[in-house]
Length: 425
Image 1: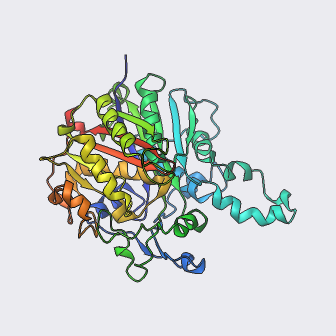
Image 2 (image 1 turned 30 degrees about the vertical axis):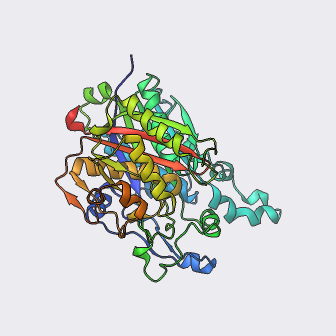
């Protein structure tokens, strides 16, 4: 018998806040987290704006009990978000010296380039023959899988420890995989999410490909123009989002607060055929992914009240909106649609997780945050979508019974899932 899966804890590190309270306030206020970035100027980037996380170090003392604080930045973001999510769910960390493991807790976490900064910063030691100075923590910090490994160490998780790296779909895919594990009865709780660091070495390729906005260096808050005819690329960003997923009965028995129920999700790929490529989606497979997520959730398309899109402020936005229309057979009645990236930029491997948290906060707070700078809408979007449902300003008093979240990554990979308002459980 399959289990029901709920979200009972959330933690975030983002350009608009590193506590859930601050993050929610700035979502509601539609406050942009994009600023001028001196680091990108020094590296001669064409784009010189970015979303740099506002991490205040509030978990540093605790993290220092488990590992040296001179660790990889992406890992620190993920660990801090996970600690906050764990506490938000009503738990405390076990003693660092305890022998017991948690056989009913698993981890699915990932990034695109965790460990990259740590390696680059120490590359000269290797090239100079000073390998002995790297220290014993070097290997796990420099490995992409270090994110999951560090989390396993802190939370003594021993159901499963998995690392996901599926480009911009990483955060959402991690959540779907964690959901499946609980649904199938293989764990009672899962920590799931994604992270990436503010790193010119990660962002340089996007700048070379002209995917980053280069015409708003003097007006950083106008860089992100999701769904707009004036879109010229995205502002790169960084951070982490972590969620505690839990078997519903387990959560109910301990009296946990429930943020949302995850009803079902699907992961697929486009095979880089039929219009799909390394950087563009195979629209047929995107539509299939969304439809399969709804089928597994056993709800109908017309029940969806809100879509939190992938929407990157590139030419792919119009393609994505058309795909949503085809997947949900939208003609007369349209759900609200917005882009959290319009406020925080593109956080790469963290995007799906942070945007999921934004979705849940809007669902519980009964609002839809504005998509900044979305006007004028792209003409291909205007043709197929009701512009009134793509808000320029925050909309209050909105009942969101069912929300759908999706991300689509480089390599033509897709992840989508559906959530239900906790009031309907």
